[in-house]
Image (cartoon, rainbow over all chains, first blue to last red; front, side, top):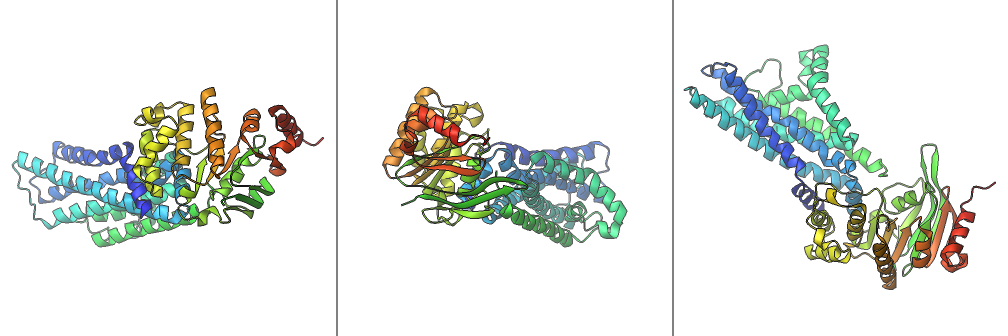
Length: 244
Length: 235
């Protein structure tokens, strides 16, 4: 499909998206290191999963990466050339979802691998036993990949709906830092676990907290549902909008 | 044949009518100058022709077909629009390579058009380092990439130096001489008088004149006085 080939070519010829994705594993390594240096008892069996769960932090960057897919094209007016090449705008959005979802998953894989490596290294440095075969380790590893992919997809939809990079990023960050926490308290834990970041916690912290969260697979499905709703709204709006 | 037909085009943005019941034809093998004051509806008409704007009424056809129904549109129609842009961090050659991937033209065509617009020596620089004239040349290269039969160019001389303007005039005449349809929206009437075979003049979203240049006198001065008369606010 030429739409997909074109999206890959676009990504391969600029640097900013890659710098953004590279920030993911960096924040994961820093977060785990901070956890260990702040005096966490690494001999506590639960600490290993708490460390690994930092992979979820990287999804903030895949979310912004996804926002740039469409909003970045409006920012630089390259969206005009994109729609001149492909007047079927729905397929353009679909191709962006495929390519950015794949890149988000790949970034998640790197972040999960970084989390695993740095956790295992700290455990070795502190003479603690790292349980590679513990169920939570690989659950969190896979959940981290899925969360990073899902947030890239949500970002593509969000950026196509809002189109303004600053506006979309500000809304996303405000949602993460403020809105979801407050909304969660207002509606209570029974409903809050259906909100996107509670759902993503279920994905990558499954082995730690199970009581107030969805099961891991449930969290994954809920995030995919959000991605689908945003994508559908993005396609509907993009088809109708004039490009001026 | 790939003539452009605008048929009864109307476009409103909210309460503002940008284009009202506009109809004209730009035939193949000729350069058509598309003239009008700022805000007269030229850009809206071009964007509607390219499927970027949905008409409120009427239609625009290229070789009898709406843009969105063209197979491989970039190989049929090349466009240079004022608001079409570049990622500042992308190298010029890569900008064209992205477009080449989108319309399935081979990579060597990228080097051909870079040579054609005289940008080969700057091909590996990032667009943020480009002057306005260089960006304009890159935009022209993008329009020509698919070797299209139809060219729609909005202020193509913008930012070009005198030698560049002379070069552009020769290029456009040559393209029309090969039987292509060339539409040039411009404010530079003296330049249009030297380049165009036909002119379309619009004002306040309405058509004021469409016909051969010689009907308006042909010279730059005659075109200017005709333009000012046709676009004057009725007293």
